[in-house]
Image (cartoon, rainbow, N blue to C red; front, side):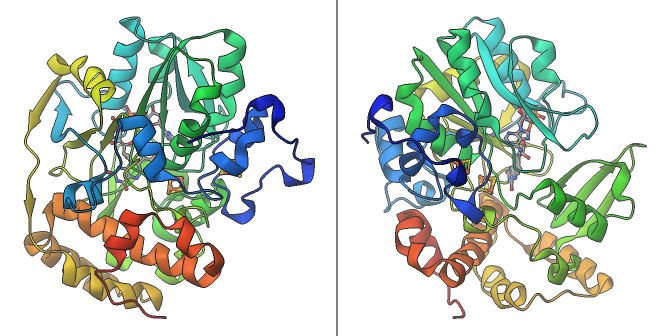
Length: 396
Ligand code: FAD
Ligand code: SF4
Ligand code: SF4
């Protein structure tokens, strides 16, 4: 991929500070002078996943290989958990642990990650962490759009040459597109999967429509048991079945960027740490290249692992959920609970659950782009996503 040199790039008028307009995911690039590259770099203006895979991993996805199509270029996957989990981390804290090891081993001089503001536990505050304490203070998801790349100028000013960036797919696509302009000697990227993100205002609506006590929620996750798990300040857990979510109210909550996103699995990170391809309670790890393996090796003695597994068949459940979501059907709570129990007993597990989640989101997002941005559909949907969506019958 070629980018015009910085000095030749055209200045953008202040009125176009977010050229992706309503599709902007606030990745932070446009808060820096790297905005000059936005038309090439923005995930919502110029989808270029295969070219950037080639640049980053030495090859793009093999579309004849189902694991590549679903999970991206990889050297292997595993399920893992920390032997001693980090209290207050999103899962067991593998991401924070790798970041600490990268810093303390001297492989990097700083880590781009996201803390929260003092006033609001869900308001993201991107930083360049230079100590174990600063990395730990960034643990747990800020389940809102986060301008992680807004600190890129500070990286340049600091003179840092070796950097670790933690981020989600849209942030990492823009980062990869400007990587060569950053003047770094070494860049490591530790990604998480990401879907259904929201603005801070959207998050409030989600919490208020879904949780019994929105103001005390400290953490939530859409888990493999088909329930949303809310953890409250007093340590209690509240479970809400997916099928009982008030989809009629939630349809407009997710950010337009996230309803147009086809990089759920963070294709351009070196190493991806999520949960959805692993058994309940474990984390799911995808090693994309040698830099990813190098990062994982650093925490070898702090984690236990087991091979990834796959069971069940997602296809009918996905096909049936398409019109239900489209018509914003909400099941009564008792029916939703029953359906959740049945699906958990007989439904997709491990990698098949991950495929279920990818299929459900890609079909929904494909319809969203087709209906709201038809002129973008062909260029914006990457080849692997087109292949996934083509397995299903979609409404117009
Ligand atoms: P921790 O050690 O707690 O560290 C979390 C790290 O995430 C921190 O370093 C922090 O800098 C970073 N972070 C927090 N919020 C953001 C943000 N908004 N943007 C960028 N970086 C952030 N995994 C799945 O398998 N399926 C999903 O559908 C899924 N959705 C996700 C949605 C969002 C918005 C996010 C941020 C993550 C999602 N993940 C998903 C990843 C998963 O929830 C965990 O973050 C991951 O498994 C790491 O857990 P951990 O305990 O190792 O992380
Ligand atoms: Fe700029 Fe990022 Fe928004 Fe695209 S998503 S317009 S690069 S801030
Ligand atoms: Fe970015 Fe996609 Fe996550 Fe939205 S769902 S924040 S667009 S990676």
